[in-house]
Length: 131
Image 1 (cartoon, rainbow, N blue to C red):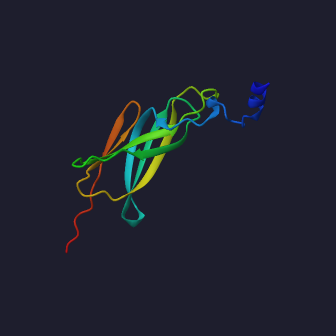
Image 2: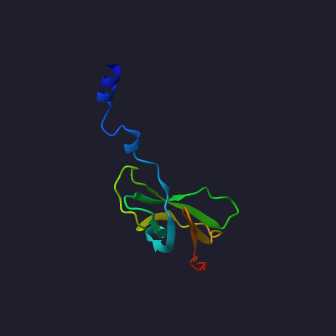
Image 3: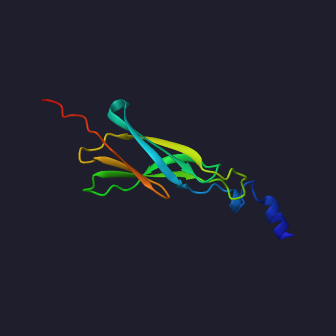
């Protein structure tokens, strides 16, 4: 009897297979675009693909920057569909973007990492201002 009551009292969506999975690296990155953004910032956009349909919330997540390195690294991640979801079994394009503060002058490139590859895009720093 207690087991039946416990099952009836469980909230909808409480089953482990129905909970949102944590974000995972997407399958691949194809292109990275870096462009100036308002207020002296940079817009970074990555385009790539996931292995199936149903992935949501694509993001570029910064990795810890190591001092002395000239590269900012971001993971391209998204939330996979629930294991029981019916999804298309084909590569599906996905895009994510982030606006970041203008990096220090020692940063010369941005690398986007995924499950199977990474793409590096060089930063072009504006010319120094005359005093």
